[in-house]
Length: 267
Image 1 (tube, rainbow, N blue to C red):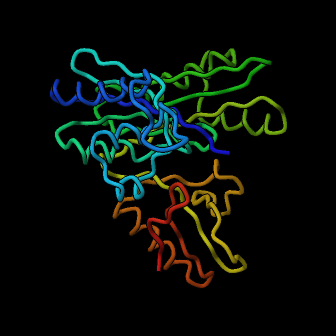
Image 2 (tube, one colour):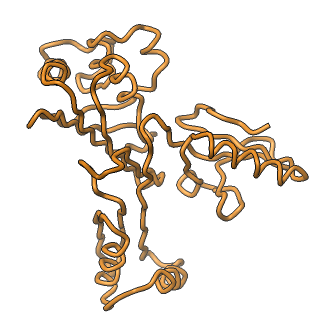
């Protein structure tokens, strides 16, 4: 069963192009058009790109397991709220191929797998940079923040303290590791447009299969939520290759994966 991410899109472009996308979405959502594939729902992202001209090859190539929940067009900005399996789908990439002159900003969050990212580098639409979820004294708390200072101030407040440092927070976590109480801080990854977020997997002596890997602590993650998340960029690939080279005696091989696809593997 998939973990579902909440993805927000803000799309800029000419009024004609945005209205074209909006009208296609509206036709499916209001059941004026039938889904493009048998057993598909009206909310499926694949309907939109297919109706806008996506080829059979593109539909098969791109990952489109996402569903539109809300949409509106205001002040020449098309806003879309979607639910997407495991994290970002390829909806935005294919939409951009079909209509090259539009600009698509997004914010995606799925806390179970620690997915929290945006390509809005200038905070034009999405200023959220930290997300806190916690369970304290029988109550759940969650909130977004633009700065680390605001984040720590909020944590101090829910712990009924005047202020709290990172070290003090880590000590609190250690003291409560066996209790139901927790505080989790998720920092937003800022991704350049076109760069993909992937999980790190690794295989080494004693392992037959690749497993999700926590680079920071140098061990198997055990659960995908603890795996290292990185951008699939030339710098990341170079660093992973260097790390593999430094650990040749342990036969380390690293992979970058997303949605069960392998995008890179060290030599």
